[in-house]
Image (tube, rainbow, N blue to C red; front, side, top):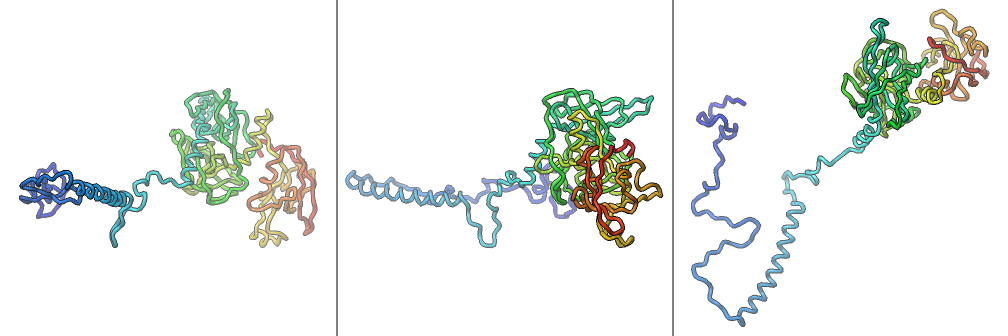
Length: 428
């Protein structure tokens, strides 16, 4: 540190502190004025110097004095103890003064409940988070890279993103404890950016699975994964929005697609986070981190865990991963569309093709049930469609072969139609 003070000492040792160079050394105890004396701290007795010893007294005359001294000593000791106790316990702050608040020395022990919950949630889930390393065949042009996933069954069932494992020639799964296993893609989801990976292992830690059905904007969201090669990275934020529909890329910005009904979060999602869990403050998985927006920074997205649950169960049952399908193109109805097209309702799904093609796929379940372009689907099995529960969301819990009841509006009249769901084509 330098200074431009013209009055600073110029003959001081430059190795001394700035204060010593500027003001000189602190006076020592030997610098006290000659003859200065002070009584020891915490005593009320004055220094006493006696030139001659007091005269000796007999025992008879001394007894009263001794008794008085003992009583006085007891009283004095009690009063001193009270005074010291008050000083040690908590000195009163002088009027207009500055005093430390109660427990000021215990700041490091203060913990916000939510922060403690985040730490506990991470402790619960992190052991089940894995790194998935994919390697491609250079001759076939397969993909290579690193992503994340999490174990949801102790015998080696792992949920991850489709783009993490798709087209990979080989997979290596690295567990949180450092063990490595070759991985095999059990199946690819035909509807979302999800995939199931299996490793040959048992007694593995699993991530508690929660629900995304009752999420609320503002609640805590924790993203766990292995971004940029940094294992077990934790980022926190909140649920920023629900039911998002975006054109997004994976975290490596190598591909793009339209994704529906996503959880939006401001918890940082970076390359390598893909496939990792999005967790609530109770330590339950509520989503699968999948994408970052192409058009904005700081916006991450995750697939709701309730969307993933059907294929997770299909894998455990040994079934092929399939999704239910009606076979229509539709446009979500809102107040603006209702006003523009003079529709009788401001919610639902308007069966309509936007590219001039067929609004109802020939030979599809919808065609077999007699649905037509211009029909408005307003409910599924009595559950009304809304911005947070569109047509695809409401049929998602069903399996191909299930029969559902649709309530539709046609020519301003309502009717109910039974539809037996089909299987979503791989390219659907």
